[in-house]
Structure formats: C-alpha cells, structure tokens
Length: 430
Image 1: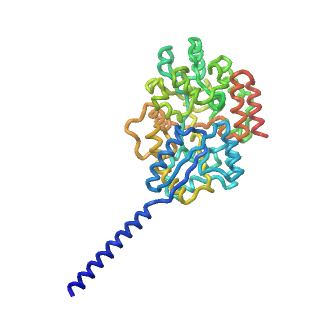
Image 2: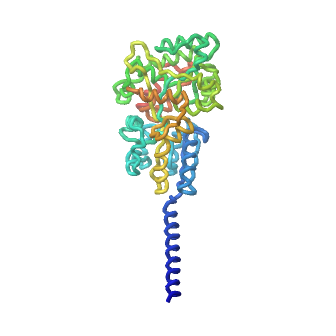
Image 3: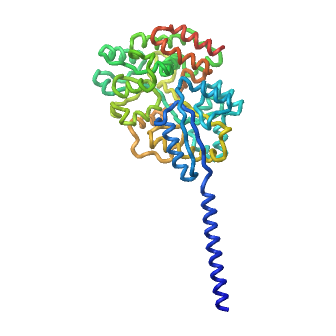
C-alpha cells in the first residue's frame, strides 16, 4: 500500500514537472515573435541617419523575433522619384520607401501603395509616439493625411563657422542685406561665403523659397498652388534674382554646378566655407568628430534673415519632416507590423542616442549630455511659432525636378531669374 502510494506520488511529480516544462516551452514560444523582413529604399547610404538607426532597432528587435533583418537600398536623390514610380508600376516597392512628390503620393494612395500612418499607429496603439507638430506638418503637405513617417523633424537655417566670423569681425546678420554684406567681406578676404550643392539643386532653391516667404508672407507658396499667384509675378521673380546675384558674385564658390551634397557639406565641416544653409538633418555629421573637423565649439546657427519691410514671419523658420518615408501596405505583413510597432516606440530614442538627431517621434529618455548643436535644434523647434514650408513642398514631381535641375544654371548665369521661374511655372501647370 505504501509502495503504491509512493508510485502515485512519484508519477504525479513527473506529470507536474512535465506540465511545467511544457508550459514554460509554450510561454517561450509565445514570447518569440515572427521574423520581420524590412527593406528601405532611400537616398541615404548605410552609415547615414535612417539606415544606421533602423539597423540598430532591427538588431534589438531580433532578440524578440529571431531572424529579423533590415536592408537599405541606396538610390541617388536625383533618381529616387523615377525609381519609386518604376517599382510602383511593377508592384515591387519594398516595405519602406522615401516619399515622392505630392502628386505622386496622391496617385499611389489611390493605387493602394501608401499606408495612412495615423490610422495604422492608432490600430497598433502607438499614436502617442508621433510628435503632434510633425504629424501636423505632414498633414499640411499630404492633403490632411499622415502619409509618411517623420524619420526627421527639422528646422532649416544657416550654420556658420564661429571662428571665421570672429576672426573677420562679423556678427550674426539681422537682415538679408547684412547677410549679403557679410558675404562680400568674406569673399574680399578670399574666404568662400557659402557652401551649396548645385547637383542636388534644392540647397539653392531653398534660398529662393525663403526670400519669397520673407518678402510676401508664409502663405506665398500656397497662393501658387491655388492659382492666386504665379511664379512669374514680379515679386516672385525678384526672389530668384537675389539668389542669382549671389551666384554671379561667386559667393557659392567655383564649381558649384558640379558639387554634390557630401562634398558641399565637407567644405563647411572642413572650414573651407563660412556658411552652410541646411536643415538639422546635418546633426549626425555635426556630432561626428571624424566628419566635423572644425569642432562643435565652432558651429553656430542663425535663422534665415528677413528682407527689410517683408511680410513674412520673424524669425523665419522653415520646418519639415526631412525626406519622409512611406509604408507600402502590400508588404505590411503581421510580422512586419509588429516590427513597425516596436520601431515607433524606439525610433526617437535611438536616433537621439546614436546621432543626436531630433525626429518626429517621441523621446522617452533623452541622453544626459546633448551636444551643443543638438541643443540648438531642440530650442529652435520649441520656439517655432509660425513655421513655413520650403520652395518645392507643394510642387508636382515634374515641377520639383524642373526647379532643382535649373538651380545651378540660375546661380551660374546660364539661366535668368525670369526664365527659371517661367520654366517652373510651366511645369506646374502642364
């Protein structure tokens, strides 16, 4: 009887242990998520902001979902729109791709190739991870929809070399005329005033847009889109002429037409140009000692100075979500959807920690020691009251291409300001 009782007890113990092990195994299996396969089509190289951050996030996520992978497919800025449209026509877009011009987004939305991020994040329970101002900026561009991920949330303005300014007795200009005067003084001493990429074009057309906003007001480009004004109107042409004048005086340096983005950036970071009009997406490079050879202590920033008597907001602060990134719903599998949720919860923190980058995602735990450049951006974003967009923000793909391809001829004297604006206006209406 005692033996039988002992056997029963022993068998019971075995069953309990087996059940416990089974439960543990089941719990472990449930804890593991299915592997995500994420690919990004972008204008950034693997060591730049988005690919670096997404690689880090996916590596961390793979601990929860073994086998998860991330791949970045680089395409030059000048070819990205064409590449996106080709892949879209073939049904071959990856999960994530840099967002094209507004007209292309509208067409692709109708074709079911664009996820409404606001709705998707609400479904995933991560709506609060989006910075409201970033979402509002995207809605202004994409007809009321959050049609893309704000992998950046940027201000734009003039980064300047403090040492060059101090050595030459210059102070931060308060007006556009003072900016031009400072450029003249630098040029007279053999110092290149501005670095800019003529190949990209948009670093030059940004200046055209800022002069338009400063002179005519923050809604000046909305009037172009709605047909209440034309780019060929005298005051709009005058803005392009001011930028053409900077080029005619040589303030962008020699070879601006053949200069790409990275070499232009290097001119500033190596101390070979005094100023660089650029967005805060440059923070990654400013915070990288290997690239920033002038050092953070010599990097200053000022908002684009207004035109005297202009109607625009002061200070003039263009804001954007960088080159936004769209989600392809056809590749948003349940596994990738779980990755997306994890991404939303971590992107702001990882981008801030790795690159010192301000993004359109909430930061849960800011690093203790933010760089001086990152602190500048954080303060500027917080202070922005009436931000404006940028020259091509509301343009069609054709008008955007026309504008950017003709920027270099504008500043090298191969195209007049009137002809430049006429070409873009025709592209808008054709």
